Amino acid sequence: MDFCPDLLIQLRGAKRVTALTGAGVSQESGLRTFRDPQTGIWSQHKPEDLASPEAFRRDPQLIWDWYAWRREAIKGVRPNPGHYALVKLSEHTPQFTLITQNVDGLHRMAGSTDVIELHGNIRLVRCSECGQIVENWEEVEGTVPRCTVCGGLLRPHVVWFGESLPRAELEAAVEAARTCDVFFSIGTSGIVQPAAALAYAAHNRGAKVVEINAKRTLLTPKADFVLSGKSGEVLPALVNAAWL
Ligand code: BV8
Ligand code: ZN
Image (tube, rainbow, N blue to C red):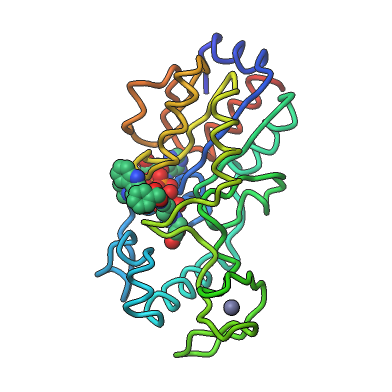
C-alpha cells in the first residue's frame, strides 16, 4: 500500500496526534456497525430507537435484553490489526490521544491506555436512580437486575441518544482535537453529534485531518488525506510506512 509522502512527513513530524474511532474499526473483529442491519428479533428496531432513555422507561426488559444480546455478541471477540496499529501509533508519537465512540472495550483489550470512551462501555452497568456503577451483577432471564444500594433498575453504562456525554471525557476530547497536529477519523460515518464535530474542530485549528474509511462520508470532502479501505489493513500499513 503506497502513501502520499507528505502524509508520512506530517506523521513523523507531528508533536500531537489525536484519533477518533467508530464502529468501523471493530467491523473486522466481527462486530456489526450501527449502519449494518440488526439480526433476529432486533431487526425490526432502529438502534437509535433502542438506545434511548425513553425506550428504557417504556420497556426496561426489552432494552436490558438488547444490551445483554450485544454483550453476548462481543464475548470472545478480539481486537483486530487496526486496534493494535493504534497502540503502535501511540508509541511513535510524542503525544497521542485515542477517542472512541465504541462501547465494545476492544481498544483497551488491544493495549491502548487512557482511551476516552465518549459513549461509555457496554461491559459496565449502573443504577438508573443513584448512578452506582456495577461491574458484576447476576443475569436472571426475564428480569432487570436492581441496584443493591437503592433498589433502582440497573441500566448499561453507555450514553443514550438525547443524553449528554460525560463532561470530563467530552472536555478532554475537545481539547485533544483542538491542540493536535494530525487528527485521524477512523471507521466512523460522522453522523452522531457531538463526536462528529471533533474533526472539524481540529481542522479549524489547522490540524491535518486524515480519514480512514471503507466508504466516503460527510467528512471526506474536508479531509486533507483520504485513505479508502479497511482500517485493519490501512492502519498497520501506514504505521509500517511511517516508521518501520
Ligand atoms: C447529546 C452508545 C445533548 C449507545 C451512542 C445536532 C444535530 C442533530 C442531532 C443532534 C445534534 N445534537 C445532538 C443530537 C442528537 C444525537 C445525534 O447526533 N443524533 C444523530 C442520529 C443525528 N446526539 C445525541 O443524542 C448525543 N447526546 O447530544 O446530548 C443533547 C441532548 C438532547 C438534544 C440535543 C443535545 C448522544 C450521542 C451518543 C449516543 N450513543 N452509542 C449504544 O452503543 O448502544 S451513538 C453510537 O452510534 C455509536 O457510539 C456511534 O457514535 C454511533 C454510530 O456511528 P459510527 O460509530 O460512525 O458507526 P456507523 O455504523 O454509523 O458507521 C460505520 C462507519 O465505518 C461507516 O462510515 C463505514 O463505511 C465504516 N466502515 C465499516 N467497516 C469498516 C469501515 N471503515 C474502515 N474499516 C472497516 N473495516
Ligand atoms: Zn441505586
